[in-house]
Image (cartoon, rainbow over all chains, first blue to last red; front, side, top):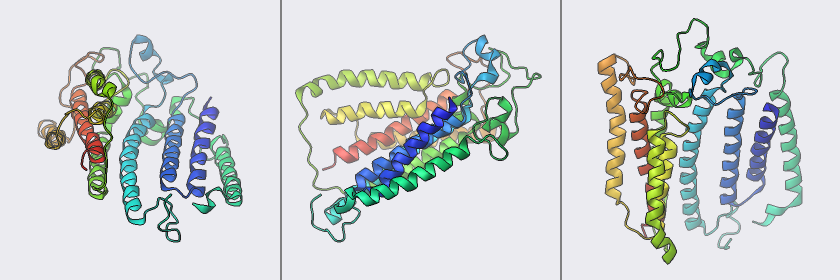
Length: 119
Length: 247
């Protein structure tokens, strides 16, 4: 089960990296960066996964008896942090892209030789 | 964007990335000597246990349900975010504040047009806003008992504000947002200083002696989550106002 989580999160990371390397549109690059971030969050949660684990919430006496079967809560807390930071940085990067569109009249990262071209 | 769809660049990128992905996958499922990332079946091999060298699961621990062996919440993720690692969370709120501040400086403030909202959105937006505010309030009040908490609650509340902005309704003005944000931010550090005066340690939980699993349990955790929810909601609604209103 852990192998499936790691494979899917790594594939998400590399789909995003492929997008960052090959696209020229700034908005597409930002979307690809968000895909990388999602993959890394999933990878962190997968590292704390336990085979046949239960949620780390103390609900009843049964969950107290199975304390060692709970999944690791520390990576989940760190992922909660990184999601919020990702939202703030994405908003900041989008505002930078708007400013770039204003000055260069294009959202390509190669705007120097095609300035004035509406993309 | 001339060469965005060029075949050669795409093939080279695919080859390099597939090689890297194979290598990282091979390292991460390796169970030999060295770093063992995924061998977490026994509790002693987990991340928290290996790096903190602290084990709360041994047999001498006097932890029982509805006892106060640890004065934390029922949701262990919440007690990590708002109790054990509260410095991390408060500094993260500051990072969010700084990014929103830079966002307000950088965004260009001219040549924006607003589309007129449709009648359906205009009539339905108060009902949706009330439902969303209810769910957001439930999230941060129940954050120490069930999945949820201050950050998702702030996001939900700010989405309610976003629906009001999109529908052209009057929601809240900028000054109220700034005042709410400032009061929430000052209160977080005020409670920290109060716990320093009372207990001697910054950010220590000084409301103890309640049963794990009650609605009012966990001491300061619901208080901190309510403050964080209001701060995040004010900051995120600030983004929507910057995008849609000032033109």
